[in-house]
Image (tube, rainbow, N blue to C red; front, top):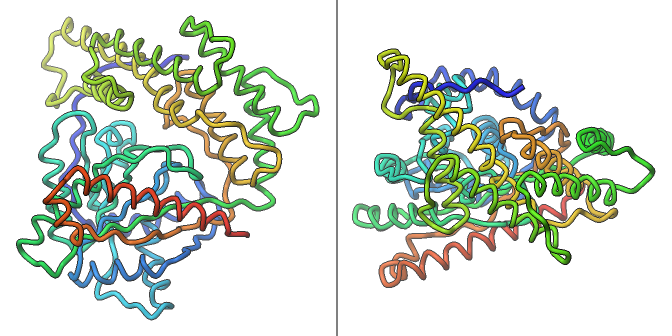
Length: 445
């Protein structure tokens, strides 16, 4: 049954701050949340010394730190928050590293999270210092707030350089330049005040590893996929079962958009055609023209336009409208919701243009693919990230630290050629994340 969509007033969030009540709530409720989402998984940090030392310098005021983290599953900020608040000091102490104050972190998040995340998210995120920012419209206030927080210190600022959930842990499909641009701007300003206080980027990647229960959960997940697609297990192996379901879901999307695939088109090429059709459909419903031909810019613009019609900016009370005005606004909100269903398909499908894992692939690779295949069905049926099913609990959560990137050392290059300096820093960040993936692949439970 489709939901009844009505326009709602703008949902304001308080200015970011650190609340002792929120810290207390996280200590009490955070463990329960992590248990239901991740079970009894144990956190393991690898190559932790750069993490500890970066925090030690930042908390002592000797540096400013931007913690950039891979964001494939959506729960990385919660995992890192718990680790930093309640585990980091103990782990660092074992390495002989002590902090001069309690470690915290201020995350950056998209404004839309406050809309779909619910009342608890709208309270707890700003109460933990998290800072909202817009993706697709000018947000000078949001950017100023982030840079000011970095400059003032002492707590690191957490940014997902992928810009959103990326759905894959074993590759780095794309990185956005925002974190590096912000870091260079902060380093340039900080240089005028204190040349001996560098701005550093700390790359962190989180990986899940599964035990024997993971295999049972994987089979359960595959059966759920086959229930959606109408198939039965006739004794095929993992790869064939998932390829059959994947191709069926792909064909249903092609029927939806009246696409006739080319005879020799690959799965990825067929997905590209579907994404273009989905973006066109969303833009047609909203009556907008793309500001750019770049896929993600089009997608972000559709997302922002849709939210602005469902949650009306700068209106705190809709009761002042006439019944006719309100009805038109509600109709516009309903259209925006339907347009955003097309956008949500694109949001996921771009990352899903990968082969089905082989029979001998590691268990964590198989589980991630199966979870994503279920999400492919979910997005095809009109779902969004909030409907994404992640029901396979890991046995270990690996927090893998990459190499520190000192942006202040690169300021001469930045002042000479900003574009080249940013590109070089981005290349080093990607290399650091790839190193994290390679190191994590060596971990055995």
